[in-house]
Image (cartoon, rainbow, N blue to C red):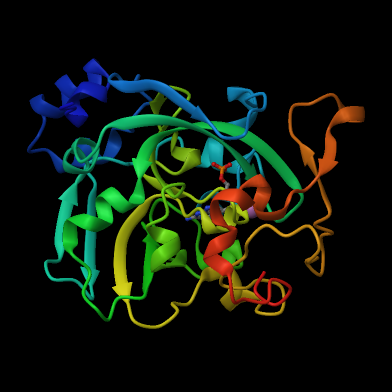
Length: 302
Ligand SMILES: Nc1nc2c(c(=O)[nH]1)N[C@H]1C(S)=C(S)[C@@H](COP(=O)(O)O)O[C@H]1N2
Ligand SMILES: [Mo]
């Protein structure tokens, strides 16, 4: 499958882009609108087996502090976010560091749909139909060396388009990390789409992580840089409040957050009286991922 990013870019935008390619000012003014993704494998993988949450909820109720701390703010404040052109840098403990543009990233592996549960540490959850491919396909491109034990991720940050750290109450750029085996796990998705289209800005355009067995904040949005490192990298929420957030942050109904009980969750979009459900260990993905944490005290690494 050869998919050029131009093929998934709305025609009017693409024509404009070619027409004005040299005019940086105009490029900056043109937001990238969601466009239909073709060539997505039909074998949609629904590991949740549950009803998909509506588009209206998943794209209107968001956490994306770069575009505001209110749930409804990212959808409005990211409307003019310039997500194209995009470059992603992959470096650190690797044989061959690489800078890829979005076309290269989109062409790297066949796109597939993955329907995953998403559980936010705040106690709400959704079921979302992501489009992407296993992150491992991207990571294999750079040949990590023997020192590489963790993968550090960094979000794009532009103070001209986004809130300041003072406004948001957290440091930017947003940073996250995974142990190498977690990053290479087949469930760990590099997502470029949602509901059959390119990612809406508020959901982390143009590419984000989706790690379904961990709390939502591990699924870092709008990734600009990936680094292979030897030591456990710092992560935004663990730095901000170490007593409440750990590096691993696997969904665990028996380990409460100081402000949020984790034993149950509210499934957004369900009738109020039936919306509360029990939270599952590893968000229901224990069969696939529990073996990653063999020797670890799960009550400590949450
Ligand atoms: N860069 C960045 N990534 C982020 C966040 C953020 O504020 N900034 N919020 C996280 C949190 S707390 C959650 S629950 C999910 C929300 O993803 P969604 O809005 O697509 O549902 O994104 C995560 N990724
Ligand atoms: Mo979250």
